[in-house]
Length: 202
Image (cartoon, rainbow, N blue to C red; front, top):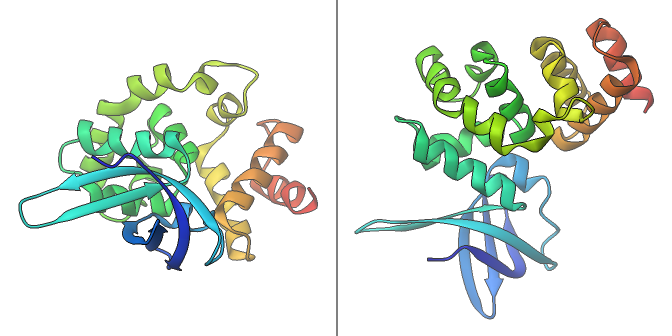
């Protein structure tokens, strides 16, 4: 089973990457949040892989970090009704950090915004993964950590601020980083507008 690949980017699109590994081209499905971190064509790239083998097909799913790959595995292995394709869509909509925060805070309305996720599926995500997220993610257990700060903040306001920056042209990782920094600087008891203004100035 393939768990890791290192090679040269041959082709790249928002949802698929072809990686040249010593003359062999691997077609790897990736979420948009991973595509944003992929280096340009011709440069080296390392991906952590989740492999799915069936009688008539084989699929590879790639992620820049091991933690993203492991969270993808957690979703498809622990939550009934969610397979690799839906999990890929979920991780294309939101970063792992935002998803973990939503699950930890039982924010089913935020989770329901992900493609292929209705209210019942969002509830299953929370039920099946809440304890696993809270125990496996050390940052959520630290009062001084960024994730803990997010946990004390309104998910809807946080998501609105991130969405506003994306609308203004920022990529998801950069928008997430700026809003996170603004939240740390201002604290939780501030309106969304103040968070956006601080994020744009950071």
